[in-house]
Length: 243
Image 1 (cartoon, one colour):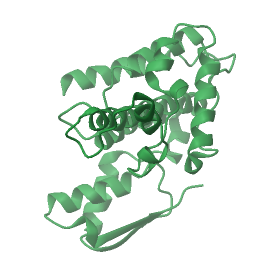
Image 2: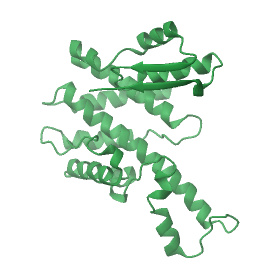
Image 3: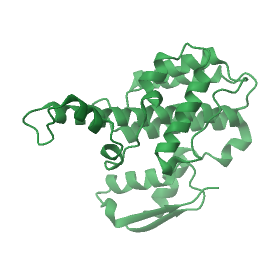
Image 4: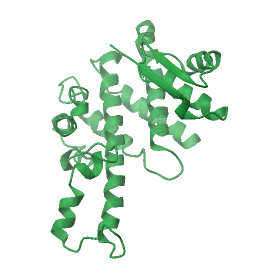
């Protein structure tokens, strides 16, 4: 726990060095975009390794003898999207980008990666930031941040990837809100306030609607409330919108 808190602080200190001529409203997209990219890359790699083991195991129902056929299956987009995992092309995977982190063109490589991911995953079209080649963004600091984010293992045993992603996002959103001052409250509500609202609502069943859902904190806290009180997640439906 303490190790992760130290990592959070180190990540923030590194991210804060990126500011240069950018304000917090801009550079939060730089940092959060990279964290999301690491998350989907780890999810892809997890499925890739699982599939690889099945294809290479003669005792498996998925066993494929020919190497070329195995390669084709490992790079079949449907093998990932059917498991609710985004397909990440080779040059958009974290391992590739981290190997290029020290290059002066790393910003363009990340932008290209975001663009390719959107092309292969229609649900992400127009969502991912493509601002890493911005001349105001210090590329050396960007490379350092990529190396640091690379130490977050979303697939490591002992914790759920989505829970860890939520925790990292929540930490950074709080830091960015503080950095932006008064305007930061427009996109971030402290977790303690959200938790209080949920406990007042007592969402055991029915529908939960958040008209300004932002990062989905209300939904996360509603799920935690149900789990802590022995309820069933299937008893509620969640709805939200965001401008």
